[in-house]
Each structure stands twice: as C-alpha cells, then as structure tokens.
Image (cartoon, rainbow, N blue to C red; front, side, top):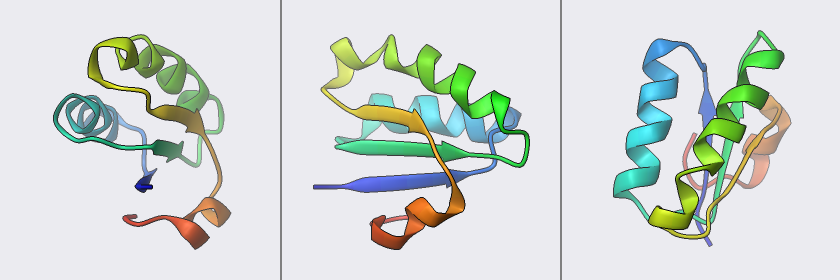
Length: 72
C-alpha cells in the first residue's frame, strides 16, 4: 500500500496532485491545507480521473494523516 499526504493545496500543490495521480500508482492520496474547504473540492475533482489512472482513494485530510503516510 502506498499513501501520500500532500501539504499545501494552492496552485502548485493542486498541479502536483494531478500529475502525481497521472504518473504514479497510489493507493491513497490525502490533501490538506490551512484553508479547509479547498482540499475537499480538489479531491472531488481529482477523483474524476481515477477511473483512467487506477483506483486511488483521494480525499481531504489533516496533518495527523501523516502518521502512516509513505511520503509527505
């Protein structure tokens, strides 16, 4: 299982998450940001490409999700 926690969901973070999903096999991508609403919207948008890239669980989260992440 591979889990990535992305901290920071601005223009760079959002682009990174999109590229990561398209080029890397992940089981889980957790997105967190100080603006709590932004990761919810981005994770829903990114879920739309998962049928083409694999079955990645994409969702908004908190810093505490880093405890079992493979990469932060």
